[in-house]
Length: 100
Image (cartoon, rainbow, N blue to C red):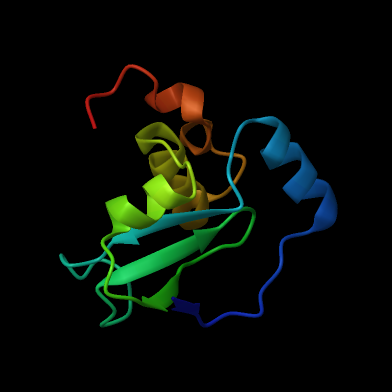
């Protein structure tokens, strides 16, 4: 698996988001083309806006399972990367009762 990015989160923000239960990476299925890339799978880095193409044969669910990322964490990472890490939806607790 290869992720094409050099972006890093601000260290203080990264530590805060880690304390809220967000993983370093989450993987999103982009087969619907919502992300601005042709990649089938994209990665979201904790504390970093946007997403990054991932070259892999695995599915997003398989990659998340390998990295112990829950569905609630995945959705929190997706929304944080899109709408800001201070968003209420950028926490796993916001997704705890959602059917994902």
